[in-house]
Length: 237
Ligand SMILES: Nc1ncnc2c1ncn2[C@@H]1O[C@H](COP(=O)(O)OP(=O)(O)OP(=O)(O)O)[C@@H](O)[C@H]1O
Ligand SMILES: O=c1ccn([C@@H]2O[C@H](COP(=O)(O)O)[C@@H](O)[C@H]2O)c(=O)[nH]1
Image 1 (cartoon, helix red, strand yellow):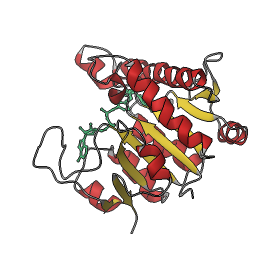
Image 2 (cartoon, rainbow, N blue to C red):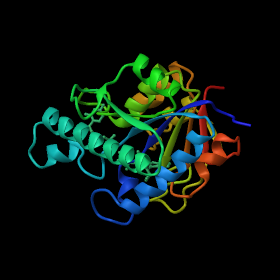
Image 3 (cartoon, protein in one colour):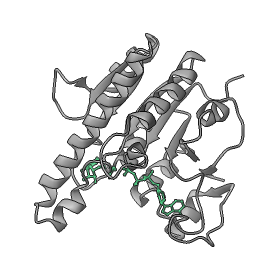
Image 4 (tube, helix red, strand yellow):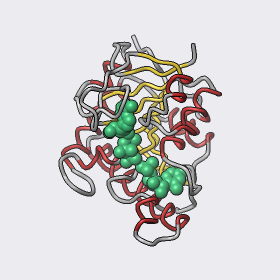
Protein backbone atom coordinates (compact mmCIF):
# COMPACT_ATOMS: atom_id res chain seq x y z
CA UNK A 1 0.00 0.00 0.00
CA UNK A 2 1.17 3.50 -0.80
CA UNK A 3 2.37 5.58 2.13
CA UNK A 4 2.21 8.85 0.18
CA UNK A 5 -0.15 9.71 -2.67
CA UNK A 6 1.29 13.10 -3.66
CA UNK A 7 4.95 14.04 -3.26
CA UNK A 8 7.35 16.77 -4.22
CA UNK A 9 10.63 15.20 -5.31
CA UNK A 10 13.63 17.51 -5.16
CA UNK A 11 16.47 16.25 -7.30
CA UNK A 12 20.02 17.47 -6.98
CA UNK A 13 21.44 19.11 -10.08
CA UNK A 14 24.93 18.13 -8.97
CA UNK A 15 23.95 14.49 -8.59
CA UNK A 16 22.83 14.54 -12.22
CA UNK A 17 26.49 14.95 -13.25
CA UNK A 18 27.25 11.45 -11.97
CA UNK A 19 31.00 10.96 -12.25
CA UNK A 20 31.32 13.75 -14.81
CA UNK A 21 32.67 17.19 -13.98
CA UNK A 22 29.85 19.16 -15.58
CA UNK A 23 26.43 18.83 -17.12
CA UNK A 24 24.04 15.93 -17.52
CA UNK A 25 25.18 12.34 -17.30
CA UNK A 26 22.64 10.44 -19.43
CA UNK A 27 23.10 7.20 -17.49
CA UNK A 28 22.13 8.94 -14.23
CA UNK A 29 19.32 10.83 -16.00
CA UNK A 30 17.83 7.64 -17.41
CA UNK A 31 18.12 5.80 -14.08
CA UNK A 32 16.28 8.66 -12.36
CA UNK A 33 13.59 8.56 -15.06
CA UNK A 34 13.09 4.81 -14.52
CA UNK A 35 12.68 5.30 -10.77
CA UNK A 36 10.21 8.14 -11.26
CA UNK A 37 8.19 6.21 -13.84
CA UNK A 38 8.02 3.23 -11.48
CA UNK A 39 6.29 5.27 -8.76
CA UNK A 40 4.14 7.30 -11.16
CA UNK A 41 2.80 3.99 -12.51
CA UNK A 42 1.86 2.99 -8.96
CA UNK A 43 -0.44 6.03 -8.93
CA UNK A 44 1.73 8.45 -6.97
CA UNK A 45 1.34 12.08 -8.08
CA UNK A 46 4.90 13.29 -8.50
CA UNK A 47 5.94 16.94 -8.68
CA UNK A 48 9.64 17.52 -9.35
CA UNK A 49 11.94 20.45 -8.69
CA UNK A 50 15.50 20.00 -9.87
CA UNK A 51 18.62 21.99 -8.96
CA UNK A 52 21.09 23.55 -11.37
CA UNK A 53 24.44 23.04 -9.67
CA UNK A 54 25.67 20.76 -12.48
CA UNK A 55 25.48 23.75 -14.83
CA UNK A 56 25.52 27.11 -13.02
CA UNK A 57 25.02 28.63 -9.59
CA UNK A 58 24.53 32.36 -9.05
CA UNK A 59 27.05 32.54 -6.25
CA UNK A 60 29.80 31.00 -8.35
CA UNK A 61 28.97 33.63 -10.96
CA UNK A 62 29.59 36.35 -8.40
CA UNK A 63 33.10 34.95 -7.87
CA UNK A 64 33.66 35.34 -11.60
CA UNK A 65 32.48 38.95 -11.60
CA UNK A 66 28.78 38.54 -12.55
CA UNK A 67 26.11 40.64 -10.89
CA UNK A 68 24.30 38.39 -8.35
CA UNK A 69 20.86 38.86 -9.88
CA UNK A 70 22.13 38.05 -13.37
CA UNK A 71 24.01 35.05 -12.00
CA UNK A 72 20.88 33.79 -10.25
CA UNK A 73 18.87 34.21 -13.43
CA UNK A 74 21.48 32.08 -15.21
CA UNK A 75 21.15 29.52 -12.40
CA UNK A 76 17.37 29.45 -12.74
CA UNK A 77 17.72 28.87 -16.48
CA UNK A 78 20.10 25.99 -15.69
CA UNK A 79 17.30 24.35 -13.68
CA UNK A 80 15.02 24.67 -16.72
CA UNK A 81 17.61 22.84 -18.85
CA UNK A 82 17.65 20.00 -16.29
CA UNK A 83 13.85 20.00 -16.16
CA UNK A 84 13.59 19.58 -19.93
CA UNK A 85 16.14 16.76 -19.76
CA UNK A 86 14.07 14.89 -17.14
CA UNK A 87 10.87 15.45 -19.11
CA UNK A 88 12.49 14.14 -22.26
CA UNK A 89 13.92 11.07 -20.47
CA UNK A 90 10.50 10.29 -18.97
CA UNK A 91 8.68 10.76 -22.27
CA UNK A 92 11.16 8.48 -24.04
CA UNK A 93 10.24 5.59 -21.70
CA UNK A 94 6.50 6.18 -22.10
CA UNK A 95 5.81 8.25 -19.00
CA UNK A 96 3.68 11.37 -19.47
CA UNK A 97 5.52 14.40 -18.07
CA UNK A 98 5.30 18.15 -18.52
CA UNK A 99 7.48 21.09 -17.58
CA UNK A 100 5.86 24.12 -15.97
CA UNK A 101 8.10 27.13 -15.45
CA UNK A 102 8.17 29.77 -12.74
CA UNK A 103 9.25 32.34 -15.34
CA UNK A 104 7.25 32.94 -18.49
CA UNK A 105 9.00 31.08 -21.29
CA UNK A 106 6.40 29.41 -23.49
CA UNK A 107 6.82 27.27 -25.57
CA UNK A 108 9.42 25.63 -23.29
CA UNK A 109 6.68 25.07 -20.73
CA UNK A 110 3.46 26.65 -19.54
CA UNK A 111 3.73 29.06 -16.64
CA UNK A 112 3.45 27.27 -13.27
CA UNK A 113 0.26 27.54 -11.24
CA UNK A 114 -1.10 25.25 -8.55
CA UNK A 115 -4.27 24.72 -10.60
CA UNK A 116 -2.31 23.68 -13.69
CA UNK A 117 -0.14 21.28 -11.67
CA UNK A 118 -3.21 19.61 -10.12
CA UNK A 119 -4.92 19.40 -13.52
CA UNK A 120 -1.87 17.61 -14.94
CA UNK A 121 -1.69 15.21 -11.96
CA UNK A 122 -5.33 14.28 -12.59
CA UNK A 123 -4.37 13.43 -16.18
CA UNK A 124 -1.53 11.16 -15.08
CA UNK A 125 1.39 13.50 -15.76
CA UNK A 126 4.56 13.87 -13.76
CA UNK A 127 4.88 17.64 -13.28
CA UNK A 128 8.37 19.16 -13.42
CA UNK A 129 8.56 22.69 -12.10
CA UNK A 130 11.54 24.52 -13.60
CA UNK A 131 13.03 27.92 -12.89
CA UNK A 132 13.19 27.70 -9.10
CA UNK A 133 10.96 30.24 -7.37
CA UNK A 134 11.46 32.67 -10.26
CA UNK A 135 13.28 35.03 -7.88
CA UNK A 136 16.99 35.62 -7.29
CA UNK A 137 18.58 35.03 -3.87
CA UNK A 138 16.71 31.73 -3.43
CA UNK A 139 17.64 28.12 -4.13
CA UNK A 140 15.83 25.13 -5.55
CA UNK A 141 15.62 23.71 -2.02
CA UNK A 142 13.43 26.67 -1.13
CA UNK A 143 11.57 26.31 -4.44
CA UNK A 144 10.86 22.68 -3.57
CA UNK A 145 9.45 23.58 -0.13
CA UNK A 146 7.36 26.36 -1.65
CA UNK A 147 5.95 24.19 -4.45
CA UNK A 148 5.57 21.23 -2.10
CA UNK A 149 3.45 23.29 0.26
CA UNK A 150 1.48 24.85 -2.62
CA UNK A 151 0.57 21.57 -4.32
CA UNK A 152 -0.30 20.06 -0.91
CA UNK A 153 2.31 17.33 -1.16
CA UNK A 154 2.36 15.00 1.85
CA UNK A 155 6.14 14.91 1.93
CA UNK A 156 9.16 16.59 0.36
CA UNK A 157 11.54 13.88 -0.85
CA UNK A 158 15.04 15.19 -1.27
CA UNK A 159 16.76 12.70 -3.57
CA UNK A 160 20.47 13.30 -3.58
CA UNK A 161 23.86 11.59 -3.56
CA UNK A 162 24.13 11.14 0.22
CA UNK A 163 21.91 8.68 2.09
CA UNK A 164 20.54 11.02 4.75
CA UNK A 165 21.25 13.90 7.09
CA UNK A 166 24.49 13.66 9.07
CA UNK A 167 25.98 15.54 12.02
CA UNK A 168 28.31 17.17 9.46
CA UNK A 169 28.74 17.02 5.68
CA UNK A 170 29.59 13.32 5.11
CA UNK A 171 31.43 14.19 1.90
CA UNK A 172 33.88 16.25 3.96
CA UNK A 173 33.86 14.62 7.40
CA UNK A 174 34.23 10.81 7.45
CA UNK A 175 33.41 10.81 11.19
CA UNK A 176 29.95 12.31 10.58
CA UNK A 177 27.06 10.25 12.02
CA UNK A 178 23.75 9.72 10.26
CA UNK A 179 20.41 10.59 11.84
CA UNK A 180 17.39 8.36 11.25
CA UNK A 181 15.12 11.23 12.22
CA UNK A 182 15.35 14.72 13.65
CA UNK A 183 13.23 17.79 14.20
CA UNK A 184 13.24 20.92 12.09
CA UNK A 185 14.42 22.85 15.15
CA UNK A 186 17.43 20.57 15.56
CA UNK A 187 18.31 20.77 11.86
CA UNK A 188 17.94 24.55 11.97
CA UNK A 189 19.81 25.14 15.22
CA UNK A 190 22.68 22.85 14.24
CA UNK A 191 22.83 24.58 10.86
CA UNK A 192 22.99 21.24 9.04
CA UNK A 193 23.70 22.26 5.49
CA UNK A 194 21.89 19.50 3.63
CA UNK A 195 19.02 21.97 2.96
CA UNK A 196 19.15 25.73 3.26
CA UNK A 197 17.62 27.36 6.29
CA UNK A 198 14.85 29.16 4.38
CA UNK A 199 13.72 25.81 3.09
CA UNK A 200 13.72 24.18 6.56
CA UNK A 201 11.79 27.16 7.94
CA UNK A 202 9.14 26.98 5.23
CA UNK A 203 8.61 23.24 5.77
CA UNK A 204 8.48 23.66 9.54
CA UNK A 205 5.91 26.46 9.40
CA UNK A 206 3.72 24.50 7.01
CA UNK A 207 4.25 21.11 8.61
CA UNK A 208 5.70 19.48 5.49
CA UNK A 209 8.08 16.63 6.46
CA UNK A 210 11.30 16.18 4.49
CA UNK A 211 12.95 12.85 3.76
CA UNK A 212 16.57 13.06 2.57
CA UNK A 213 17.61 9.88 0.74
CA UNK A 214 20.06 8.44 -1.76
CA UNK A 215 18.51 8.73 -5.21
CA UNK A 216 21.49 6.98 -6.80
CA UNK A 217 20.40 3.59 -5.48
CA UNK A 218 17.79 2.18 -7.86
CA UNK A 219 14.54 1.21 -6.16
CA UNK A 220 14.93 3.61 -3.21
CA UNK A 221 12.18 5.95 -4.36
CA UNK A 222 9.68 3.11 -4.67
CA UNK A 223 10.67 1.62 -1.31
CA UNK A 224 10.14 5.00 0.35
CA UNK A 225 6.72 5.42 -1.17
CA UNK A 226 5.75 1.96 -0.03
CA UNK A 227 6.66 2.95 3.52
CA UNK A 228 10.14 1.52 3.98
CA UNK A 229 12.35 3.55 6.31
CA UNK A 230 15.15 4.93 4.15
CA UNK A 231 17.27 8.04 4.63
CA UNK A 232 16.50 10.64 7.29
CA UNK A 233 13.13 12.16 8.07
CA UNK A 234 13.02 15.76 9.30
CA UNK A 235 9.69 16.81 10.78
CA UNK A 236 7.84 18.62 13.57
CA UNK A 237 7.49 16.68 16.82
N1 LIG B 1 24.81 17.63 7.50
C1 LIG B 1 24.76 17.15 6.24
N2 LIG B 1 24.20 15.93 6.00
C2 LIG B 1 24.12 15.45 4.74
N3 LIG B 1 24.59 16.10 3.63
C3 LIG B 1 25.15 17.31 3.83
C4 LIG B 1 25.26 17.89 5.14
N4 LIG B 1 25.86 19.10 5.01
C5 LIG B 1 26.11 19.28 3.71
N5 LIG B 1 25.69 18.21 2.98
C6 LIG B 1 25.82 18.11 1.52
O1 LIG B 1 24.55 18.34 0.93
C7 LIG B 1 24.55 17.71 -0.36
C8 LIG B 1 23.16 17.42 -0.76
O2 LIG B 1 22.51 18.61 -1.11
P1 LIG B 1 21.92 18.79 -2.60
O3 LIG B 1 21.28 17.55 -3.04
O4 LIG B 1 21.10 20.05 -2.58
O5 LIG B 1 23.18 18.96 -3.44
P2 LIG B 1 23.67 20.18 -4.21
O6 LIG B 1 25.08 19.84 -4.54
O7 LIG B 1 23.45 21.42 -3.45
O8 LIG B 1 22.79 20.10 -5.54
P3 LIG B 1 22.01 21.18 -6.38
O9 LIG B 1 22.64 21.14 -7.69
O10 LIG B 1 20.61 20.69 -6.42
O11 LIG B 1 22.10 22.51 -5.73
C9 LIG B 1 25.35 16.45 -0.17
O12 LIG B 1 26.01 16.11 -1.34
C10 LIG B 1 26.29 16.76 1.00
O13 LIG B 1 27.62 16.89 0.57
O1 LIG C 1 14.47 30.22 -6.66
C1 LIG C 1 15.62 30.16 -7.12
C2 LIG C 1 16.27 28.94 -7.40
C3 LIG C 1 17.53 28.93 -7.94
N1 LIG C 1 18.17 30.12 -8.18
C4 LIG C 1 19.50 30.12 -8.83
O2 LIG C 1 19.73 28.90 -9.51
C5 LIG C 1 20.93 28.27 -9.04
C6 LIG C 1 20.78 26.78 -9.10
O3 LIG C 1 19.94 26.31 -8.05
P1 LIG C 1 20.51 25.35 -6.88
O4 LIG C 1 19.44 25.25 -5.88
O5 LIG C 1 21.75 25.98 -6.33
O6 LIG C 1 20.82 24.06 -7.54
C7 LIG C 1 21.11 28.85 -7.65
O7 LIG C 1 22.47 28.79 -7.26
C8 LIG C 1 20.65 30.29 -7.85
O8 LIG C 1 21.66 31.01 -8.50
C9 LIG C 1 17.55 31.31 -7.88
O9 LIG C 1 18.13 32.39 -8.09
N2 LIG C 1 16.29 31.30 -7.37
